[in-house]
Length: 584
Image (cartoon, rainbow, N blue to C red; front, side):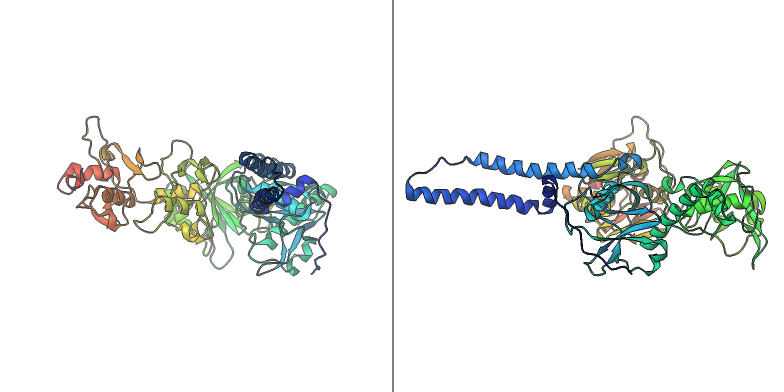
């Protein structure tokens, strides 16, 4: 592979020199303070000898000068950051803050930087750690400038933390920051497999680079040539039959995939006559390089049926629910050609001969898409206002797309509550009544979050607002109690919340909230604060032992939570409840 060259140094402006000192700002301010104080001591010693003491500088003036120096540094940092970053947050609708990187492609080559330090040095994407108040795409743009000197503009999100960027200007950042300017190399697509990559950064770098360069090559070819081979023409036409599903569904992984197309309470199946187990199947097939899974499903459906569709929901690892946009959009047969089609009702699903070995439990997925009562294992589209007020561990309303922002210390729409933020909220809430878990049962303090792809908690994943809402919705709901009418008794739970009015205690806001359930940890804490001699809830369950009422089992059960409706019902039926024992 190419050998790294010596870093290039440039002259620096005063503003950029201040930026270079940003990471050492605390030491800089301490040094200034020591200088001022030390200078004063020296002056006092000299004046004692000469008996000609000057008027001392008032402490308030010294403090003011020190504070102003800190403000100057911060001001310079902010001015330079704004100078080298674009409006990508607004253009790409990006609100999340995280470490990020850029893939910069130019002339069929991608920009890489050599990182010589760490446990696995090698070629890497330009990128790095976020600054406070910076959205991910701004982090990527700024880091590229600091590491290469180039000002870039993020134009597309390629993965969770990688953006495709274009060069705006060169030699914009002239002063090295942190590790300084890194050695650069413009790599062609043919070189990607032979390069030594830095370990444990930015996921599948080789795959992302190949995808970015393939997209650029296709764009350049379509602009230069008026005709192309049949395969290239097919791929160009596929660009016109796929949607923006990658951005809408935030789905960036590449894999073979299929669509379930629903129309008038019927689903579309295709007959596949070849292979060892022919039969009815979902329209779908193999991925193309640089194509997200949802795009593969859309393209394959068009190639096999002629219909242009749009993926609207992920149903499983490799199956999407799709809706029809146009008929006859694909007119030229590709690969096996157009297949025989059939629109099937729910009642017909159990009597069909399905093709073997494809797309998992097809029958179950088809029933689910047609309105099965079975809960979906993956998130549905972004919930709208009016959804349940289910809160995450930081008190943010998951079903309304809210997450906690550690920068503003408040819930924000479109923000995901990160694992570190969730852990901090759990610790502040004193999560002592069991394992500190989020809405999906994952342990954020151990770096876990929900992975919709794997259908389980996974190290390194983060539970999004939509995933938390979906997990909360999958929790078996208690049998509804009769709706409380005006004049119902003011029966209260262990925390004093009115159960029959649907209230529960929120440890985040430290008050009773309608639509919130008092969980076992909160109930236990309330009972302890009251010094209750009988630490049981309204249904006689022991929350300090992790118990709650299970309507399904009709008994107290480990890991169950007594909802306000269940508590009210227990007290209404009498005998079973223990409200009299815990009432103040």
